[in-house]
Image (cartoon, rainbow, N blue to C red; front, side, top):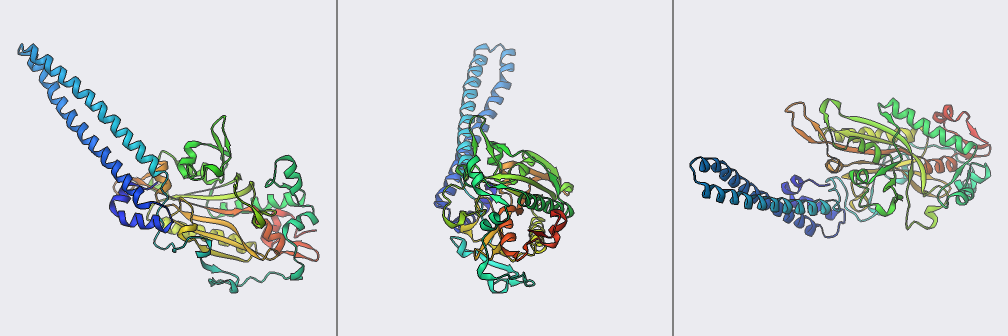
Length: 437
């Protein structure tokens, strides 16, 4: 969540940033945060004054008793009792103001960086790089995938049926829509991608974590899924646990209430997990096949870093994700998200999309974000600076590297040929073959 220092240092910038994110009532919310902080400070000052007076009177009681001034001593004791009651009242007022302030801050999104473009939706995102020239952005290389009878390109759900890779109907039978069953070569392709992505993360210096796939509410609040995304998470009500929407949640929460040494940073973790999302309100062609699922596999990369190095960390993460797409020989583009299309918690976010030839559209496969101190403030994730031993908030970052469903969709659709479905060279050692037949 936003820090009070952030707000006091440049209130106007914070409000303008929230408006860029299209957060309704930004001015009113920030004014209320400051009003509550004023109440807390006032109660603190009154408490401090009462405590100082009580200490002064307490010290006089012994002297009064020694001088035989028993009545005055008893009156002083009564004064200290009254002051103690006042202090308890001030404590209650402080706690009430602080609780109300925290609850309000939890509902206020992060402030986007200046580089984030203005805009209300996905249409306002900026393409910053593409390996497909006619789709804009700075072209790096050119995708030269094989073209096989373009007009006859099959969408992945038909290819999955043709080669018996995925059974969507069986998933509906045992769980419901959005829970596919992978079979034979389809299951092998999933496992190959998971192992390939983990191997690449390991080569890039990420330490693999195998976290739980259910978390408590404190973890959801720590990374910002709660209260913002409560309706999109599967909730186990009896135990008050949540199925994770991404490995970001448990992995980042490893560092909740932790003070790190600067020498430990940057911390680089990766994790493969199943992810669970209710996707309430999703409908239409965008949910066909693997396009939008309730359960899916994903490899997440997470970094904890210093404020001075987090920009460089973000760039390294972007390069890593781009390298994966290049090795998979997929047409891709990178977008800098506009204020209105960014997540609640991000200060800066880039999306990676791959092009689906059969569907004729771009499919998002990764969001890679810098959260600045927003998550760290919720998590109380801090580090001790080597220079002056000062304890300060870390920066947190994460990204998908990668989410499997739409990668599988693009691999199937873009690599279909007369002999079957071609497996990219980098993936072949993990899959065990060069073709799905």
